[in-house]
Structure formats: C-alpha cells, structure tokens
Image (cartoon, rainbow, N blue to C red; front, side, top):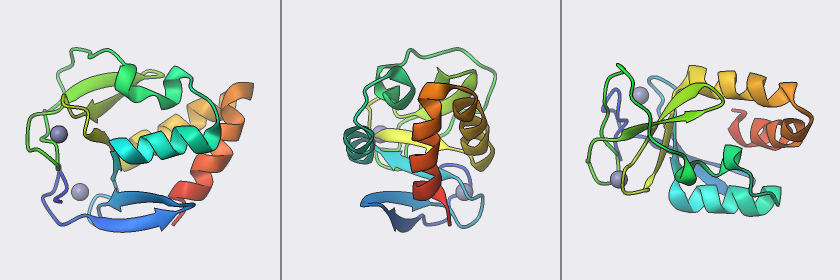
Length: 126
Ligand SMILES: [Zn+2]
Ligand SMILES: [Zn+2]
C-alpha cells in the first residue's frame, strides 16, 4: 500500500497485536478496518470515539486523498473536532501525525478517554 499523501510505500508496524501501516515520510498512520475492530475489542468499549466507521461525513475545504486499499477518494469525518480521512467503502481511516497527537490531547482531557489514551499511546509509540 502507498501513503495517500506522499505515495511512498507504507511500512507495517505491530504493537500489542495491532498492525498499523505507517508512512516513514509524513509519519501518518493507516488504520485498517479489521485493526479498528481488534482495537475496540481490546479496549472493551464501543463508544463513538473509537467507532469511527459510524461517523457522519462532513464538508470541508481540505484536500481529498485516495484510499490506499481501493484507490477511491476518501471522505472526511469528524472526531472530537478533528477531521480525518475515511474510505467511503469502510476500508479504514488515515491519521496524520498531527491529527493523532491532537486526538490524544483531547482524549486525555476526559476521564473516559484516559484509558484509551494509555492504550493508544502504547500502540502508536515508536
Ligand atoms: Zn506519507
Ligand atoms: Zn477503500
């Protein structure tokens, strides 16, 4: 798979049994649909924050990128005020490096989120 933003091959990284595709160029992450399922199972919760497949699409002026799996243009979804790129066929979600750290910060502000942050911190830590 190629990075939707820089078109360089993504590198597979494994953390806590979750496989992520990471771009060595822009340091963004591709989160596959199946990996999101594993993440949800591991966290044992099912709130919307980690159930991005159920989020509604939003309109933005941001550039449209293509899904690394099917090459179809991805849609924009909003999580906690952060806009992410999601495959319209639900193949997965793209996180920019900055979006990921922003999301961590938002999560850690809430009680519910702190456990999630701890786990995700482990997963994403390089
Ligand atoms: Zn990239
Ligand atoms: Zn796709």
